Structure formats: structure tokens, C-alpha cells
Amino acid sequence: MKKIAKFEKVSKTQFLKDFEGENAKEVFEKIKLPARATSGSAGYDFYAPFDFIIAPGETIKVPTGIRVKIDEGWVLKIYPRSGLGFKYRLQLNNTVGIIDSDYYNSDNEGHIFIKITNDSNEGKTVELKKGEGFAQGIFVEYGITVDDEAVGVRNGGFGSTTK
Image (cartoon, rainbow, N blue to C red; front, side, top):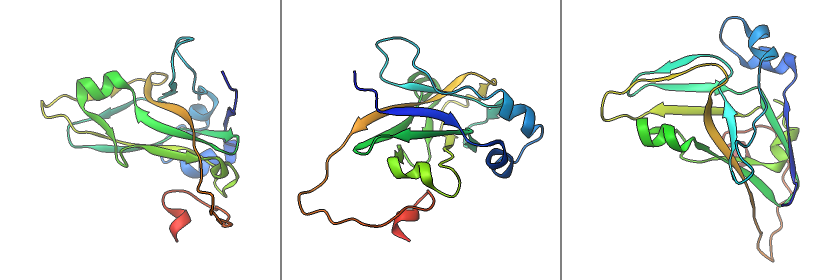
């Protein structure tokens, strides 16, 4: 297995800037880094940094407190945890989150946010406790075209490379 990345917490200063809830310092101290559940797992579970409830049709943007340093030529793809998608139709608002290797150096320290919606057709409410897995990230190698000439430098996320 290739070892190509390392998860870290963003700085406390960055997290306090991005977090909109109460007890931000306490939440920050208890953030768990993503981890695989088994040696055969492809996905790294992202854990809820605080308790939250999402009723059908509701959306929440979760500041994970996590950043990731990734080798060039790799990307981290974020998905909902399989069981939550299956049971509640929990979905990422952008379908699949893409964390590029150069996002790590952004002004926001590469802080990964995960925006999810409970798209339940059955009226099921999602309740997650702090520390429970709610999303998963999978590292994928990618290629570029032979005539690629990209020279831009990232400074932000959520569509920043097309501004």
C-alpha cells in the first residue's frame, strides 16, 4: 500500500474562525483524525466533531477541523458513510467532495468542510453523536494530459480555481 497522505487538525485559531456553534474550544480539543475501521477498508472515516440532528430535507455544513497533506498526483474523494446513505439517503451537497493536494496550502489551512443533506423519502431523521463516523474519504491517484500547462495557484476552496 502506498502511503501518500497525512491527516492533521487545522490550527485552533482557524477552527474558532470557522466554527459557528457554542463551546468551540472544547469541540476543537476533542476532534478525532480520520481513520480506517479495518485493514481492508478503503475509506477513512470522518467523525462528527459535535452532536447534530438532520431532519428530512435539512442540510448542515460541518467544519471537520481536519486538513490533509497529500502527495501530488493524488486526490481525496469524500462520500457519505455507506450505511447512512443507505438508511437515510444522506448525501453530500456536491455529490462527491474533492480535496486536491494544493488545498492544504490555502488561506483557510485547507480546512475540510462537509455539507450534507438528509434526503430521506421515508421521514427518517439522522441523529449523530460527537465521535460517530458520518463521511468517508478515499485517496485516488489521477493523471493529467500530455499537453497540460496548468500554472495557477490555489487560494481557497469551493470553486476557487474557476474564479
